[in-house]
Picture 1 (cartoon, rainbow, N blue to C red):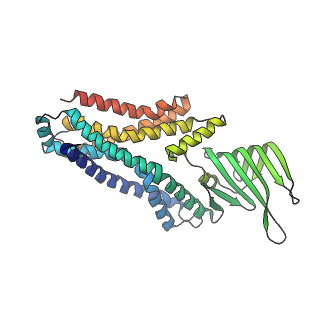
Picture 2 (picture 1 turned 120 degrees about the vertical axis):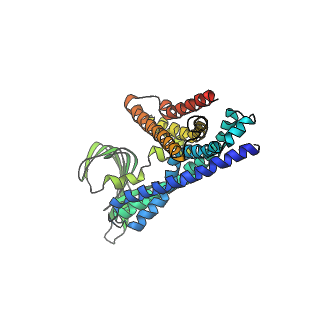
Picture 3 (picture 1 turned 30 degrees about the vertical axis):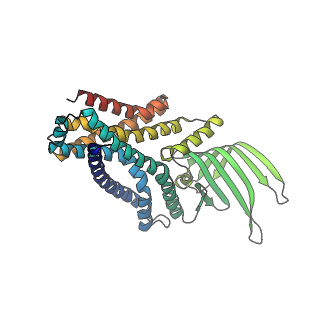
Length: 360
C-alpha cells in the first residue's frame, strides 16, 4: 500500500464514518419512536425503551453499513473529483482500475469491521434487548435462561425454539410444577410439542405432544398425544422472545443450526437464505466502494453533494428492496437459497465491473 492508496483509503473511510453517523442517528430515532407503543405495558418505561434502542444499535449498524459505505465512497471520491485531484492522479498515469483497487481496500477494512459487529457484538446485544423488553412487558411472567427466554404462567414454564408465523411456534418446551402443602415446588412433568398454534385468544393447539410425568414416588411415565388443546394467557410476543430470527444469527450460529436441522431432516431453506445473505451483505461493502468509482468519473464528476447523496440513497434502497423481494420470492417459488442470498450482491458486482470497464 503506497501513499496514494492510503490517501484514498482515508478519504473513503472518513466520509463513510460521517455517513454512518447520520444514518445511525436517524435509525436510533426511528427505533426509539417504534418502542413508544409498548411503553406502559407491564413495567416497560422510557428508560427501558432507551436502553433497548442503544442495545439494538450494533444490529442497525450491520444493516446500514453497506449504504453508509456507498454514500461515503460517493462523497469522498466525489470531493476529490470536484477538486480535480482524481484528474491529476489519472494524468500521472494511474488507471481507473488502480483507483478502484484503493477504494476496494477501504471496503475490505469496512467489511472486517462489519464482520466483527455482525458476528461478535450485535447478536448477543440484540438478544439481550429482546429479553429486557419481554421481561419488562410481562410484569414478571418471563425469565431469562441460557441462550433464550422462558415465559412463566402459573405453574407452567414455556419456551419455543422457532417461530414460523405470528401465531405459530415450533419446538415448544413445557415444564409443569406442583406445589407441596409446605409451599415447596417440584417438577411435575416436562414435555415437548412439535408445533403450537394460537387458534383463538387464550386457546392454543399443540401438535405431537410428548410428556414425561414424575410421580411423588419418583416413578416416571410417558404420554403421547397427536393433538392437545390448552387454555393459556401467554401471548405470542412473550413466547417469541426465546426465538431468534435467522437474519439475526451470526454465521457460526447459522452453520451450527443448519447442521442440527439437516441431522433431523427438518426444513433448512430459511436458514440457508439467511446464511448466504449474511455473507453476501458483508461482501457487498467492498463492491459498493468500487461501484462509486465509475460514477465520480462520469456524470457526477462536477455534481454537487446533494446529487451524490440522492444517487447513493437510490442505489442503496434499490439494493435492499431487491434483496427483500428476492428473499420473499424464494420462499414462495422455492428458489435456490444461494441465488436468493447472493443474487443481488452479484448483480451489484457486475454493475461495478462493467461501469469501471466503460470508464475512460
